[in-house]
Structure formats: C-alpha cells, structure tokens
Image (cartoon, rainbow, N blue to C red; front, side, top):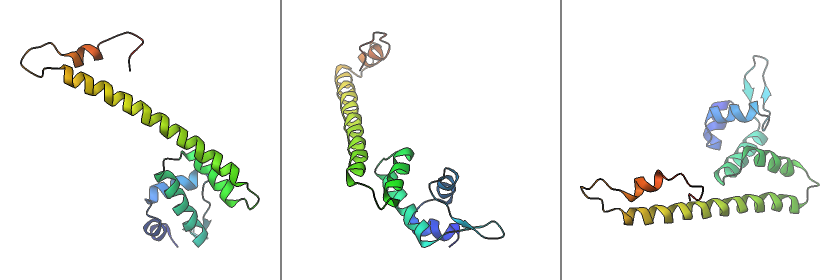
Length: 133
C-alpha cells in the first residue's frame, strides 16, 4: 500500500504517518525508487497509534505501548501501569478544569456586566498574589 491508501484506511493524515515514521514508531518498507510501501502490519500499527492518541496518550506513552504490544512476553501489569498513570493525569486535568470553571463562574456572576467600568473579572486577572487559581 502507498501512503495515500494507508492514510485512507487508518484515518490518519499522510503528514502524521510520515511523522510517526520519522520518530520510529512505524517502519514501512521502501521500494527501489524510495517510495514507502506499507504492509498490513503497518496499517494495524497506525490504527493502534490513532486510537491511543485519540485516548490522549503521549507519543512516549504510545512508544511504550507499541513496544509492549509487540512483546509476546509482556506482562499485562506493565500495560495497566501505563494506562493507570494516564488516567491519573486525566483526573488531575479534570480537577484543574473544574477549578478553573468554578473560578470563572464566580467571577462572571460577580460582574454586573453593565455600563460601569469596574469589573471583578479584570480585577481578578490583574491580581499578582501567588494564590491564583
């Protein structure tokens, strides 16, 4: 398969596929004229990477997961540990977003939103203390 075929089938843009090759996540064969020649296994790996990235795994996590996927002697505990750490990071981001949302909600409700110049939103943004949310 050429890069256009594998892009259509994997749902990934050619630029992403080339990037994954550049960083060593996939290694398509090269024909004599230098064109990439993708095998079914490359397509499967690209689908794997696409799904992992859609779940928010970092490139390094993807590298680790791909290595574990290709290792017949892996322990599922290793895979689980990567996924658990990613879930912990997601939970941390959710908590940060909830805190940001609560702060903005409070500021929006504190602002009269009328013709007067005083605005609690701008006052909060201008604060210089270290306890900013």
